[in-house]
Image 1: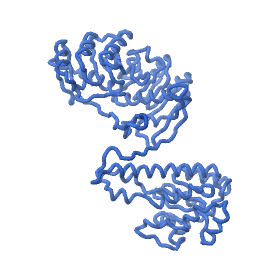
Image 2: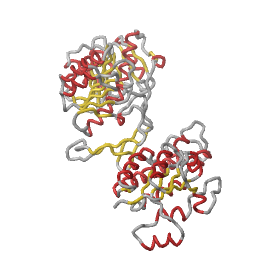
Image 3: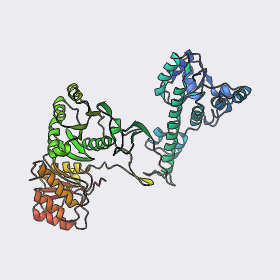
Image 4: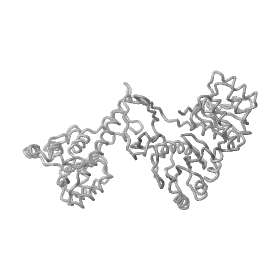
Length: 521
Protein backbone atom coordinates (compact mmCIF):
# COMPACT_ATOMS: atom_id res chain seq x y z
CA UNK A 1 0.00 0.00 0.00
CA UNK A 2 1.33 3.46 -0.86
CA UNK A 3 1.45 6.36 1.59
CA UNK A 4 0.85 10.06 0.95
CA UNK A 5 3.71 12.27 2.13
CA UNK A 6 2.28 15.28 3.96
CA UNK A 7 5.09 16.08 6.40
CA UNK A 8 8.85 15.54 6.04
CA UNK A 9 11.69 15.80 8.53
CA UNK A 10 15.02 16.87 7.01
CA UNK A 11 18.20 16.80 9.11
CA UNK A 12 21.40 16.18 7.19
CA UNK A 13 25.14 16.52 7.67
CA UNK A 14 25.85 15.96 3.96
CA UNK A 15 23.92 18.77 2.24
CA UNK A 16 24.33 17.31 -1.27
CA UNK A 17 21.07 17.78 -3.20
CA UNK A 18 19.05 18.72 -0.11
CA UNK A 19 17.95 22.14 -1.38
CA UNK A 20 16.63 20.65 -4.62
CA UNK A 21 14.88 17.89 -2.67
CA UNK A 22 13.23 20.29 -0.22
CA UNK A 23 12.13 22.67 -2.97
CA UNK A 24 10.49 19.81 -4.86
CA UNK A 25 8.74 18.61 -1.69
CA UNK A 26 7.48 22.10 -0.95
CA UNK A 27 6.08 22.33 -4.48
CA UNK A 28 4.10 19.16 -3.67
CA UNK A 29 2.67 20.89 -0.58
CA UNK A 30 4.75 18.86 1.88
CA UNK A 31 5.32 20.52 5.27
CA UNK A 32 9.02 20.53 6.14
CA UNK A 33 10.56 20.22 9.60
CA UNK A 34 14.28 20.71 9.92
CA UNK A 35 17.16 21.23 12.34
CA UNK A 36 19.91 23.80 12.83
CA UNK A 37 22.18 24.23 9.84
CA UNK A 38 19.84 22.39 7.47
CA UNK A 39 16.92 24.65 8.41
CA UNK A 40 19.05 27.78 7.89
CA UNK A 41 20.23 26.55 4.48
CA UNK A 42 16.68 25.83 3.31
CA UNK A 43 15.40 29.19 4.57
CA UNK A 44 18.23 30.99 2.77
CA UNK A 45 16.91 29.45 -0.46
CA UNK A 46 13.39 30.67 0.22
CA UNK A 47 11.96 27.30 1.23
CA UNK A 48 9.33 27.36 3.99
CA UNK A 49 10.61 25.37 6.93
CA UNK A 50 9.73 24.90 10.61
CA UNK A 51 12.66 24.43 12.96
CA UNK A 52 12.44 21.33 15.16
CA UNK A 53 13.00 23.43 18.30
CA UNK A 54 9.99 25.55 17.40
CA UNK A 55 7.91 22.45 16.59
CA UNK A 56 8.76 20.59 19.82
CA UNK A 57 8.68 23.72 21.98
CA UNK A 58 12.01 22.65 23.44
CA UNK A 59 15.22 24.48 22.46
CA UNK A 60 18.35 22.69 21.34
CA UNK A 61 20.81 22.18 24.18
CA UNK A 62 24.26 20.77 24.98
CA UNK A 63 25.78 22.48 21.92
CA UNK A 64 23.26 20.80 19.64
CA UNK A 65 23.76 17.30 21.04
CA UNK A 66 20.12 17.24 22.12
CA UNK A 67 17.52 18.40 19.64
CA UNK A 68 15.59 15.58 17.95
CA UNK A 69 15.31 13.08 20.82
CA UNK A 70 11.77 14.19 21.64
CA UNK A 71 8.31 12.55 21.61
CA UNK A 72 7.10 15.14 19.07
CA UNK A 73 9.65 13.72 16.63
CA UNK A 74 9.74 10.03 17.47
CA UNK A 75 6.01 9.82 18.10
CA UNK A 76 5.46 11.11 14.57
CA UNK A 77 7.93 8.56 13.19
CA UNK A 78 7.03 5.49 15.25
CA UNK A 79 3.23 5.63 15.49
CA UNK A 80 1.71 2.76 13.54
CA UNK A 81 -0.83 4.08 11.10
CA UNK A 82 -2.80 0.82 11.22
CA UNK A 83 -3.31 0.97 15.00
CA UNK A 84 -6.07 3.37 16.18
CA UNK A 85 -4.59 3.47 19.68
CA UNK A 86 -1.27 4.75 18.30
CA UNK A 87 -2.95 7.40 16.18
CA UNK A 88 -5.15 8.50 19.07
CA UNK A 89 -2.11 8.76 21.36
CA UNK A 90 -0.18 11.07 19.07
CA UNK A 91 -3.31 13.12 18.40
CA UNK A 92 -3.78 13.60 22.14
CA UNK A 93 -0.15 14.70 22.35
CA UNK A 94 -0.54 17.19 19.54
CA UNK A 95 1.86 15.20 17.39
CA UNK A 96 1.53 15.10 13.61
CA UNK A 97 2.69 12.00 11.70
CA UNK A 98 6.01 12.36 9.91
CA UNK A 99 5.72 10.57 6.58
CA UNK A 100 9.24 11.11 5.23
CA UNK A 101 12.54 11.28 7.13
CA UNK A 102 15.62 12.57 5.30
CA UNK A 103 18.63 12.06 7.55
CA UNK A 104 22.34 11.39 7.15
CA UNK A 105 24.99 11.17 9.81
CA UNK A 106 27.98 13.01 11.19
CA UNK A 107 31.06 12.16 9.10
CA UNK A 108 32.70 9.71 11.50
CA UNK A 109 34.69 7.77 8.88
CA UNK A 110 35.91 10.94 7.22
CA UNK A 111 36.96 12.33 10.61
CA UNK A 112 39.04 9.33 11.71
CA UNK A 113 40.69 9.20 8.28
CA UNK A 114 42.21 12.65 8.81
CA UNK A 115 45.87 12.75 9.90
CA UNK A 116 46.16 13.68 13.54
CA UNK A 117 42.58 12.81 14.43
CA UNK A 118 42.26 12.62 18.21
CA UNK A 119 39.92 10.47 20.25
CA UNK A 120 38.04 13.64 21.22
CA UNK A 121 37.55 14.51 17.52
CA UNK A 122 36.27 11.02 16.81
CA UNK A 123 33.87 10.98 19.77
CA UNK A 124 32.43 14.36 18.82
CA UNK A 125 31.59 12.96 15.38
CA UNK A 126 29.59 10.00 16.70
CA UNK A 127 25.99 10.79 15.75
CA UNK A 128 23.26 9.92 18.28
CA UNK A 129 20.06 11.59 17.15
CA UNK A 130 20.59 10.76 13.48
CA UNK A 131 20.77 6.97 13.81
CA UNK A 132 17.82 7.07 16.23
CA UNK A 133 15.63 8.93 13.74
CA UNK A 134 16.75 6.68 10.91
CA UNK A 135 16.01 3.51 12.85
CA UNK A 136 12.63 4.82 14.04
CA UNK A 137 11.59 5.65 10.48
CA UNK A 138 12.98 2.42 9.03
CA UNK A 139 11.33 0.28 11.70
CA UNK A 140 8.00 1.92 10.84
CA UNK A 141 8.50 1.76 7.07
CA UNK A 142 4.92 0.51 6.79
CA UNK A 143 3.94 4.14 7.29
CA UNK A 144 7.13 6.15 6.75
CA UNK A 145 9.59 6.60 3.87
CA UNK A 146 13.21 7.24 4.85
CA UNK A 147 16.17 8.57 2.87
CA UNK A 148 19.77 8.20 4.05
CA UNK A 149 21.56 8.47 0.69
CA UNK A 150 21.42 11.63 -1.49
CA UNK A 151 21.69 9.37 -4.54
CA UNK A 152 18.12 8.20 -3.80
CA UNK A 153 16.59 11.70 -3.78
CA UNK A 154 15.84 11.92 -7.55
CA UNK A 155 14.17 8.51 -7.82
CA UNK A 156 11.94 9.16 -4.81
CA UNK A 157 10.88 12.52 -6.20
CA UNK A 158 10.15 10.92 -9.59
CA UNK A 159 7.93 8.35 -7.88
CA UNK A 160 6.09 10.99 -5.87
CA UNK A 161 5.52 13.17 -8.93
CA UNK A 162 4.17 10.22 -10.88
CA UNK A 163 1.87 9.14 -8.05
CA UNK A 164 0.40 12.38 -6.67
CA UNK A 165 2.86 12.55 -3.76
CA UNK A 166 2.62 8.89 -2.78
CA UNK A 167 5.40 6.37 -2.09
CA UNK A 168 4.93 2.62 -2.64
CA UNK A 169 5.43 -0.11 -0.06
CA UNK A 170 8.17 -1.67 -2.20
CA UNK A 171 10.14 1.58 -2.26
CA UNK A 172 9.72 2.12 1.48
CA UNK A 173 10.95 -1.40 2.25
CA UNK A 174 13.98 -1.00 -0.04
CA UNK A 175 14.85 2.32 1.61
CA UNK A 176 14.42 0.85 5.11
CA UNK A 177 16.82 -1.99 4.32
CA UNK A 178 19.35 0.55 3.11
CA UNK A 179 19.01 2.45 6.39
CA UNK A 180 19.64 -0.57 8.61
CA UNK A 181 22.64 -1.50 6.46
CA UNK A 182 23.95 2.05 6.74
CA UNK A 183 23.53 2.35 10.50
CA UNK A 184 25.07 -1.09 11.02
CA UNK A 185 28.13 -0.02 9.00
CA UNK A 186 28.29 3.25 10.93
CA UNK A 187 28.22 1.48 14.29
CA UNK A 188 30.70 -1.08 12.99
CA UNK A 189 33.14 1.68 12.02
CA UNK A 190 32.86 3.18 15.52
CA UNK A 191 33.45 -0.23 17.11
CA UNK A 192 36.42 -0.98 14.86
CA UNK A 193 37.98 2.38 15.67
CA UNK A 194 37.44 2.32 19.42
CA UNK A 195 38.43 -1.33 19.95
CA UNK A 196 41.54 -0.66 17.87
CA UNK A 197 42.82 1.84 20.46
CA UNK A 198 44.97 0.84 23.40
CA UNK A 199 44.73 2.29 26.92
CA UNK A 200 46.76 5.35 25.80
CA UNK A 201 44.42 5.82 22.81
CA UNK A 202 47.07 4.76 20.31
CA UNK A 203 45.77 3.07 17.20
CA UNK A 204 46.77 -0.50 16.31
CA UNK A 205 46.33 -2.46 13.09
CA UNK A 206 43.75 -4.94 14.38
CA UNK A 207 40.66 -4.06 16.44
CA UNK A 208 39.55 -6.39 19.24
CA UNK A 209 36.13 -6.66 17.58
CA UNK A 210 36.26 -6.57 13.79
CA UNK A 211 33.04 -5.65 11.98
CA UNK A 212 32.95 -6.01 8.19
CA UNK A 213 30.27 -5.23 5.64
CA UNK A 214 29.99 -6.22 2.00
CA UNK A 215 27.34 -5.69 -0.68
CA UNK A 216 26.23 -8.63 -2.78
CA UNK A 217 27.09 -8.08 -6.43
CA UNK A 218 25.63 -11.28 -7.82
CA UNK A 219 24.77 -14.89 -7.12
CA UNK A 220 27.03 -17.35 -8.91
CA UNK A 221 25.76 -20.33 -10.86
CA UNK A 222 27.79 -22.42 -8.40
CA UNK A 223 30.95 -22.30 -6.31
CA UNK A 224 34.30 -23.96 -6.93
CA UNK A 225 32.33 -27.10 -7.80
CA UNK A 226 28.79 -27.55 -9.12
CA UNK A 227 27.49 -28.96 -5.82
CA UNK A 228 28.45 -25.74 -3.99
CA UNK A 229 26.45 -22.48 -4.04
CA UNK A 230 28.23 -19.12 -4.12
CA UNK A 231 27.86 -15.34 -4.30
CA UNK A 232 30.21 -12.44 -5.00
CA UNK A 233 30.32 -9.60 -2.45
CA UNK A 234 31.99 -6.22 -2.82
CA UNK A 235 33.49 -4.03 -0.11
CA UNK A 236 31.23 -1.09 0.68
CA UNK A 237 34.25 1.09 -0.20
CA UNK A 238 36.43 -1.05 -2.49
CA UNK A 239 40.09 -0.14 -2.84
CA UNK A 240 40.86 1.99 -5.88
CA UNK A 241 41.80 -0.14 -8.87
CA UNK A 242 40.61 -3.39 -7.28
CA UNK A 243 38.82 -6.09 -9.25
CA UNK A 244 35.53 -5.30 -7.49
CA UNK A 245 35.47 -2.01 -9.45
CA UNK A 246 35.06 -3.88 -12.74
CA UNK A 247 32.51 -3.21 -15.45
CA UNK A 248 31.58 -6.25 -17.55
CA UNK A 249 31.33 -5.23 -21.19
CA UNK A 250 30.23 -8.57 -22.61
CA UNK A 251 30.10 -12.32 -22.07
CA UNK A 252 28.49 -14.82 -19.75
CA UNK A 253 28.16 -14.21 -16.04
CA UNK A 254 31.37 -14.57 -14.09
CA UNK A 255 31.80 -17.79 -12.15
CA UNK A 256 33.26 -18.18 -8.66
CA UNK A 257 36.55 -19.43 -10.10
CA UNK A 258 36.57 -16.69 -12.76
CA UNK A 259 36.50 -14.03 -10.06
CA UNK A 260 39.29 -15.64 -8.03
CA UNK A 261 41.56 -16.12 -11.04
CA UNK A 262 40.76 -12.67 -12.46
CA UNK A 263 41.79 -11.10 -9.17
CA UNK A 264 45.11 -12.98 -9.21
CA UNK A 265 45.81 -11.82 -12.78
CA UNK A 266 44.79 -8.22 -12.14
CA UNK A 267 46.78 -7.82 -8.93
CA UNK A 268 49.89 -9.11 -10.71
CA UNK A 269 49.61 -7.12 -13.94
CA UNK A 270 49.00 -3.78 -12.29
CA UNK A 271 52.36 -3.94 -10.47
CA UNK A 272 54.23 -3.41 -13.77
CA UNK A 273 54.97 0.05 -15.15
CA UNK A 274 55.74 -1.25 -18.66
CA UNK A 275 53.01 -2.65 -20.96
CA UNK A 276 52.42 -6.11 -19.46
CA UNK A 277 50.31 -9.22 -19.86
CA UNK A 278 49.56 -11.85 -17.21
CA UNK A 279 47.90 -15.18 -17.98
CA UNK A 280 46.49 -17.04 -14.97
CA UNK A 281 45.23 -20.59 -14.69
CA UNK A 282 43.93 -22.03 -11.41
CA UNK A 283 45.12 -18.98 -9.42
CA UNK A 284 48.73 -19.19 -10.68
CA UNK A 285 50.42 -17.12 -13.39
CA UNK A 286 51.33 -19.48 -16.21
CA UNK A 287 52.74 -16.70 -18.39
CA UNK A 288 53.87 -13.14 -17.67
CA UNK A 289 55.66 -10.72 -19.99
CA UNK A 290 56.35 -7.09 -20.69
CA UNK A 291 56.65 -5.66 -24.20
CA UNK A 292 56.59 -2.50 -26.26
CA UNK A 293 52.92 -3.17 -27.06
CA UNK A 294 50.14 -5.20 -25.45
CA UNK A 295 50.25 -7.55 -28.44
CA UNK A 296 53.96 -8.23 -27.90
CA UNK A 297 53.42 -8.69 -24.17
CA UNK A 298 50.61 -11.18 -24.83
CA UNK A 299 52.58 -13.16 -27.42
CA UNK A 300 55.58 -13.48 -25.10
CA UNK A 301 53.43 -14.42 -22.10
CA UNK A 302 51.56 -17.03 -24.14
CA UNK A 303 54.86 -18.65 -25.22
CA UNK A 304 55.63 -19.64 -21.63
CA UNK A 305 52.96 -22.31 -21.39
CA UNK A 306 50.48 -22.49 -24.31
CA UNK A 307 48.93 -25.66 -22.89
CA UNK A 308 48.04 -24.10 -19.54
CA UNK A 309 46.95 -20.84 -21.18
CA UNK A 310 44.02 -22.72 -22.77
CA UNK A 311 40.89 -21.43 -21.00
CA UNK A 312 42.93 -18.95 -18.98
CA UNK A 313 42.34 -15.49 -17.56
CA UNK A 314 44.31 -12.78 -19.35
CA UNK A 315 45.01 -9.33 -17.90
CA UNK A 316 46.65 -6.24 -19.38
CA UNK A 317 47.76 -3.00 -17.73
CA UNK A 318 47.23 -0.97 -20.91
CA UNK A 319 44.19 -0.48 -23.17
CA UNK A 320 43.67 -3.38 -25.58
CA UNK A 321 43.77 -2.58 -29.30
CA UNK A 322 42.57 -4.53 -32.33
CA UNK A 323 45.84 -6.45 -33.02
CA UNK A 324 45.92 -7.77 -29.45
CA UNK A 325 42.21 -8.62 -29.55
CA UNK A 326 42.69 -10.51 -32.84
CA UNK A 327 45.49 -12.58 -31.31
CA UNK A 328 43.45 -13.32 -28.20
CA UNK A 329 40.42 -14.35 -30.23
CA UNK A 330 42.39 -17.22 -31.76
CA UNK A 331 42.64 -18.88 -28.34
CA UNK A 332 40.04 -20.17 -25.89
CA UNK A 333 39.93 -17.43 -23.27
CA UNK A 334 37.60 -17.31 -20.26
CA UNK A 335 38.11 -13.70 -19.14
CA UNK A 336 39.99 -10.66 -20.45
CA UNK A 337 40.77 -7.71 -18.15
CA UNK A 338 42.15 -4.31 -19.11
CA UNK A 339 41.77 -0.63 -18.22
CA UNK A 340 40.08 0.03 -21.60
CA UNK A 341 39.43 -1.34 -25.10
CA UNK A 342 39.36 0.61 -28.33
CA UNK A 343 36.35 0.40 -30.65
CA UNK A 344 38.02 -2.05 -33.03
CA UNK A 345 38.98 -4.38 -30.17
CA UNK A 346 35.40 -4.32 -28.88
CA UNK A 347 34.18 -5.31 -32.33
CA UNK A 348 36.63 -8.23 -32.45
CA UNK A 349 35.45 -9.51 -29.05
CA UNK A 350 31.77 -9.16 -29.99
CA UNK A 351 32.27 -12.04 -32.42
CA UNK A 352 33.29 -14.16 -29.40
CA UNK A 353 30.11 -13.72 -27.38
CA UNK A 354 31.11 -16.12 -24.60
CA UNK A 355 34.35 -14.29 -23.73
CA UNK A 356 33.89 -12.26 -20.57
CA UNK A 357 35.42 -8.83 -21.19
CA UNK A 358 36.04 -6.74 -18.07
CA UNK A 359 37.11 -3.11 -17.84
CA UNK A 360 38.86 -2.29 -14.55
CA UNK A 361 40.20 1.15 -13.55
CA UNK A 362 43.98 1.01 -13.22
CA UNK A 363 45.10 2.27 -9.81
CA UNK A 364 47.57 1.16 -7.17
CA UNK A 365 45.10 0.74 -4.30
CA UNK A 366 45.08 -2.31 -2.03
CA UNK A 367 42.71 -3.86 0.49
CA UNK A 368 43.31 -2.85 4.09
CA UNK A 369 43.29 -6.53 5.10
CA UNK A 370 43.58 -9.91 3.43
CA UNK A 371 41.35 -12.56 4.98
CA UNK A 372 41.33 -16.33 5.04
CA UNK A 373 38.39 -18.20 6.51
CA UNK A 374 39.21 -21.13 8.79
CA UNK A 375 36.96 -23.40 10.81
CA UNK A 376 35.23 -21.27 13.42
CA UNK A 377 37.27 -18.16 12.69
CA UNK A 378 39.24 -16.04 10.29
CA UNK A 379 42.83 -14.98 9.73
CA UNK A 380 43.54 -11.35 8.91
CA UNK A 381 46.74 -9.78 7.62
CA UNK A 382 47.89 -6.69 5.80
CA UNK A 383 48.26 -7.31 2.05
CA UNK A 384 51.64 -8.16 0.55
CA UNK A 385 52.40 -4.87 -1.22
CA UNK A 386 56.18 -5.06 -0.90
CA UNK A 387 57.99 -4.50 -4.20
CA UNK A 388 61.76 -4.86 -3.79
CA UNK A 389 63.89 -2.28 -5.59
CA UNK A 390 67.39 -2.77 -6.99
CA UNK A 391 69.00 -0.75 -4.21
CA UNK A 392 67.61 -3.18 -1.62
CA UNK A 393 69.25 -6.25 -3.16
CA UNK A 394 72.35 -7.80 -1.62
CA UNK A 395 74.69 -9.72 -3.88
CA UNK A 396 76.00 -12.70 -1.88
CA UNK A 397 77.81 -14.59 -4.66
CA UNK A 398 81.31 -13.88 -5.91
CA UNK A 399 79.90 -13.26 -9.38
CA UNK A 400 78.16 -9.91 -9.85
CA UNK A 401 74.97 -9.52 -11.93
CA UNK A 402 74.99 -7.66 -15.21
CA UNK A 403 72.46 -4.86 -15.73
CA UNK A 404 70.38 -7.17 -17.94
CA UNK A 405 70.46 -9.93 -15.34
CA UNK A 406 69.47 -7.47 -12.63
CA UNK A 407 66.43 -6.33 -14.65
CA UNK A 408 65.36 -9.93 -15.20
CA UNK A 409 65.93 -10.86 -11.56
CA UNK A 410 63.63 -8.05 -10.43
CA UNK A 411 61.07 -9.07 -13.07
CA UNK A 412 61.21 -12.70 -11.92
CA UNK A 413 60.88 -11.65 -8.29
CA UNK A 414 57.76 -9.61 -9.08
CA UNK A 415 56.17 -12.62 -10.78
CA UNK A 416 57.13 -15.06 -8.01
CA UNK A 417 55.20 -12.97 -5.52
CA UNK A 418 51.97 -14.05 -7.25
CA UNK A 419 52.82 -17.75 -7.67
CA UNK A 420 51.58 -20.18 -5.03
CA UNK A 421 54.35 -21.34 -2.72
CA UNK A 422 56.60 -23.18 -3.11
CA UNK A 423 57.31 -20.99 -6.16
CA UNK A 424 60.13 -21.19 -8.68
CA UNK A 425 60.06 -18.90 -11.74
CA UNK A 426 62.52 -18.96 -14.66
CA UNK A 427 62.66 -15.72 -16.66
CA UNK A 428 64.64 -14.08 -19.42
CA UNK A 429 64.44 -10.81 -21.35
CA UNK A 430 61.29 -9.65 -19.58
CA UNK A 431 59.12 -12.75 -19.81
CA UNK A 432 58.58 -16.00 -17.97
CA UNK A 433 60.12 -19.21 -19.32
CA UNK A 434 58.92 -21.78 -16.80
CA UNK A 435 56.78 -21.63 -13.65
CA UNK A 436 56.71 -24.21 -10.87
CA UNK A 437 53.95 -23.62 -8.33
CA UNK A 438 52.37 -24.99 -5.19
CA UNK A 439 54.60 -27.97 -4.53
CA UNK A 440 55.36 -29.37 -1.10
CA UNK A 441 59.12 -29.18 -1.78
CA UNK A 442 61.04 -26.39 -3.47
CA UNK A 443 63.22 -28.76 -5.45
CA UNK A 444 60.11 -30.29 -7.05
CA UNK A 445 58.88 -26.82 -8.01
CA UNK A 446 62.27 -26.23 -9.63
CA UNK A 447 62.03 -29.48 -11.59
CA UNK A 448 58.47 -28.74 -12.72
CA UNK A 449 59.39 -25.21 -13.86
CA UNK A 450 62.22 -26.64 -15.98
CA UNK A 451 59.89 -29.29 -17.44
CA UNK A 452 57.32 -26.61 -18.30
CA UNK A 453 59.97 -24.67 -20.24
CA UNK A 454 61.09 -27.81 -22.03
CA UNK A 455 57.50 -28.68 -22.98
CA UNK A 456 57.03 -25.19 -24.44
CA UNK A 457 60.27 -25.52 -26.43
CA UNK A 458 61.95 -22.68 -24.54
CA UNK A 459 65.65 -22.64 -23.73
CA UNK A 460 66.65 -21.84 -20.15
CA UNK A 461 70.27 -21.19 -21.09
CA UNK A 462 71.30 -17.92 -19.49
CA UNK A 463 67.98 -17.52 -17.67
CA UNK A 464 67.40 -16.15 -14.18
CA UNK A 465 65.38 -17.76 -11.39
CA UNK A 466 63.26 -16.39 -8.57
CA UNK A 467 62.44 -18.42 -5.47
CA UNK A 468 59.69 -16.95 -3.28
CA UNK A 469 61.43 -18.21 -0.10
CA UNK A 470 64.91 -19.41 0.79
CA UNK A 471 66.46 -22.61 -0.51
CA UNK A 472 66.60 -24.99 2.48
CA UNK A 473 69.25 -27.13 0.73
CA UNK A 474 71.55 -26.77 -2.24
CA UNK A 475 69.56 -29.32 -4.28
CA UNK A 476 67.24 -26.66 -5.70
CA UNK A 477 70.23 -24.62 -6.81
CA UNK A 478 71.71 -27.66 -8.54
CA UNK A 479 68.44 -28.26 -10.43
CA UNK A 480 68.07 -24.72 -11.76
CA UNK A 481 71.76 -24.53 -12.68
CA UNK A 482 71.58 -27.80 -14.60
CA UNK A 483 68.57 -26.42 -16.48
CA UNK A 484 70.68 -23.45 -17.65
CA UNK A 485 70.03 -20.66 -15.12
CA UNK A 486 72.86 -18.19 -14.51
CA UNK A 487 71.39 -16.04 -11.70
CA UNK A 488 69.11 -16.56 -8.71
CA UNK A 489 67.10 -14.16 -6.60
CA UNK A 490 65.83 -15.37 -3.23
CA UNK A 491 65.13 -13.96 0.26
CA UNK A 492 67.92 -15.71 2.14
CA UNK A 493 67.47 -16.65 5.78
CA UNK A 494 68.10 -20.40 5.82
CA UNK A 495 70.38 -21.99 8.40
CA UNK A 496 72.14 -23.46 5.35
CA UNK A 497 72.60 -20.13 3.52
CA UNK A 498 76.37 -20.60 3.54
CA UNK A 499 76.01 -23.99 1.88
CA UNK A 500 73.58 -22.59 -0.73
CA UNK A 501 75.81 -19.60 -1.55
CA UNK A 502 78.83 -21.92 -1.81
CA UNK A 503 76.88 -24.01 -4.31
CA UNK A 504 76.15 -20.90 -6.36
CA UNK A 505 79.81 -19.95 -6.37
CA UNK A 506 80.83 -23.49 -7.28
CA UNK A 507 78.41 -23.46 -10.21
CA UNK A 508 79.37 -19.95 -11.34
CA UNK A 509 75.95 -18.44 -10.57
CA UNK A 510 74.94 -14.99 -9.48
CA UNK A 511 72.92 -15.04 -6.26
CA UNK A 512 71.17 -12.03 -4.72
CA UNK A 513 69.13 -11.71 -1.54
CA UNK A 514 66.01 -9.62 -1.16
CA UNK A 515 65.60 -9.96 2.60
CA UNK A 516 61.87 -10.48 2.07
CA UNK A 517 59.90 -13.61 1.23
CA UNK A 518 56.58 -13.90 -0.61
CA UNK A 519 54.74 -16.97 0.68
CA UNK A 520 51.35 -17.23 -1.05
CA UNK A 521 48.98 -19.95 0.08
